[in-house]
Length: 393
Image (cartoon, rainbow, N blue to C red; front, top):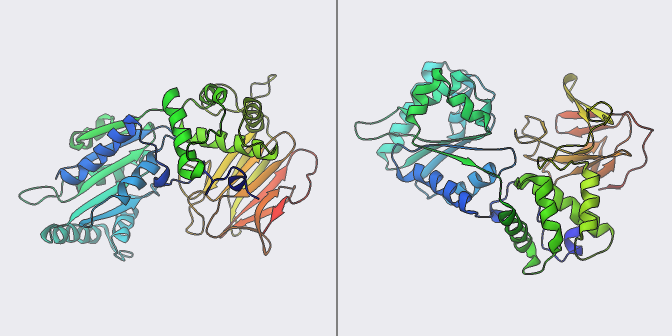
């Protein structure tokens, strides 16, 4: 029995995947959504939304997109490490074109023609760019030029750019001042206050089916805030782990003792940033294992595993990003402790495999090769050899 059934919930309340049904509308989130909506009813709408990793930007964007009216055509770009030509191609693909093998002049002509046609049909066109902190200066300049496309009456393209705080520093550079001048509104999402965080946790539990039941005991909330700083993603990570601890103890509520066990399992310190504990003799995280990421026979990257949890997926908000259509937005997670590392599927579309066997959850062993679509993760353990499979399906 999964822990959602144990707590009499219809679904898991603290998944990391962006789900508009779980949006908690704090005052600042409501204001941010109003800014996003202004891009639709203002002909020269151009909004920049920033926030720390895990602050809820992507979930907010998904909620906004779900509420768009039928006369709006939009393109959502999340892969942002692109050249100007690749960026234009990505936008046109989102609008239904096949722009490959064409030069930049042809791409621009296709874009201009599309925008003017939509305008003449009385439709509005919106471009949304997520993870925009990775955009190059050349691509940002391309966006500035696109924002200037207009008829004799009004602009024909509305734009929303969302990203981490580095985006603010990037667009404030002197060589991008022309872009900055075109921006109508900016908004920065701050972490939740302690009071808002308590309401956020109860809201997600209620949406998942808890209704008015208090699953977390009252003395848990100050500690949750202390270790997460009000960041929604960190809050989800800690609350999910605490529920697992209570489930393992067969309790119907989460006590402070179980919450502290979850914090120990994650290896977090009390910085409020989800930071890991370190070796006191060297001030460096203890490395327990490593992952080598490969695409077919090509080595792509290497990652060290320290105490805590990392998330693997397609989008830039993951700890390990795999740019592949076969990998889900948040595909899998690995929890590492002093004793072991456990990989768990996050309800991905295409799953993860060792050989032909699909895995749900596994205690990793030295030499394991985990397949995620066309990519593989090769696991090397620096501790004593590990144990058996926990669960497969």
